[in-house]
Amino acid sequence: MTGDVTTGNHNLSLKLTIRLSSSTRFDIGSCGSITPSSTIQHVKTIISQREESDNCAVERQRLIYKGRILSDNARTLADYGIGAGDSSGSGADGIIIYLVKGSAVNTGAAGGAGGAATAAATSSAPAPTTNAAPTQ
Image (cartoon, rainbow, N blue to C red; front, top):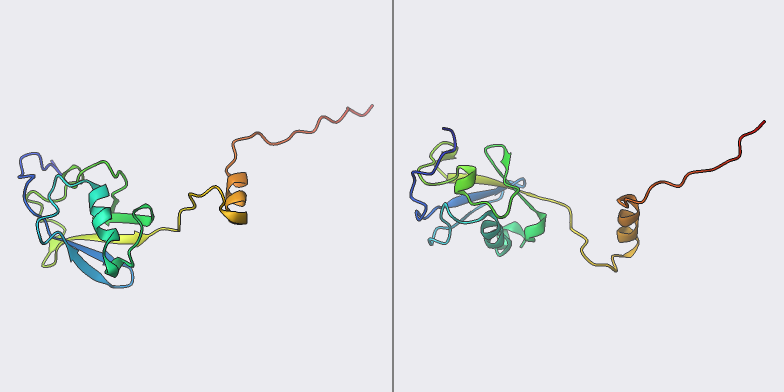
């Protein structure tokens, strides 16, 4: 079964190579901090602490492995088929994960005009209707 890592060692230390679109690359996990049972959230937190990623906030990070977006922060690397004997997609650089930086997330209520425009555009209120009297 493709991506099945249930028989692997989930305590195996992984070295991940993170690549950015700017051709920057850096390694994480070389000191045993990442295993196949590490969550995507944990990996993103480590990336956010690295200068090479411009300290990119976790909320802005989009991680991609073998063309698949690692979107669920609660899932583990093993859930996505990463580690525990995974050698496909990991060249001489180890396991390569691509980092794409998303747009900044506006979480404050006082977000200025941009926040108000976004709230208005995504409002679930029904559009106003006109009740014009029929002409005879």
